[in-house]
Length: 457
Image 1: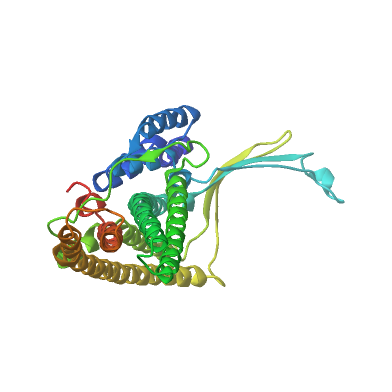
Image 2 (image 1 turned 180 degrees about the vertical axis):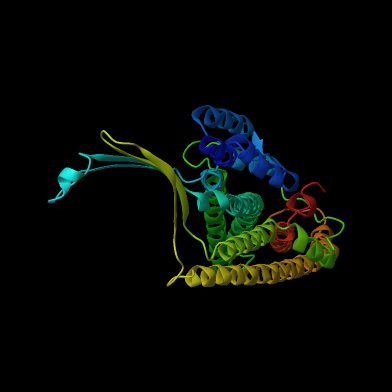
């Protein structure tokens, strides 16, 4: 009879221990699937040496020739170690889910007692006790622990997707800045060459008595200023290259890479800020992660309340046998009496953690709205300035160059007109760079970088 009564407990143990947990591969695939529709490249987990080798081979293939923006993001997703750290955090969260589905191990109790004192002769020589104890509460709390751990795993998946999207944004911004820096160096070099030709022509004119020597001194100072600007532009290009290489994860591994393509032109239109803001509240990964944290804290509080008055409850089976005497077998029950501790501290902590998670979600929503509005304003401002340059300023300088007609390129008026045009082109390029950086940041703030960044336009 006792044996039949034990079968339900055994079945419950087996059921609790066998709850399905996603594999490491499925867990990583789920996180990659979240970020996949929002970025232009797949996210890869280099879990073992074979996966690491394959990822590096693929990255090496992409590095051959010039890196487009899409290819740069793909290389970062293959080679960047910071994203691999996020995957390991995801695996740690999966391990916590595994732990939440496992009941506590049973205790085996062994004892041996011998009689003593004046009446020892009237008792058996030795009594041996053997027993098994199982904490039933660890079984009853599995559903609550598992639900909380499952939501925590989902939260970490969203956080991994958020980190990947942020990294893609940083790579895009670095690519835009490096591309602009290279072009700025070219424009500065053209300006220095034009100024140097003008100085040479002015020096000859002074020697022939056709110009004042003071003009030569002024031109030399101006040339030195332009050469200084060129040197600073080159240093900035070196810095932007190093920053991009670090984000790609290839610094020190492949230093012979180049980028392909220039900054895109100004697109026909920008995303509607109001629609973007409304979609972001629903789609941003960090907001979804914050929502999962609220759900996890709610589960934890519910579990604490449900088992407030009964935290420890153990059942077991003991067998006592005296040598040469009849054995005794029977059940044992042990539980705590909530006389002093009714788990007030745990309830207060769980309640405060839930309120904190809720406030964090509210703060995250406000921050998301603020980010979108700020970046949308920058995008709109940059568009107005770029359109002004393309409509008025650049055509004005181009007309000034064209009005001078044919002649020697080192003549003073032509040099000045050329320098004015180059300066306007540099300013236009810097505005275009700032536009695409802000456009990328806006797309990331909206939670859909691929659709809103303008990369496909």
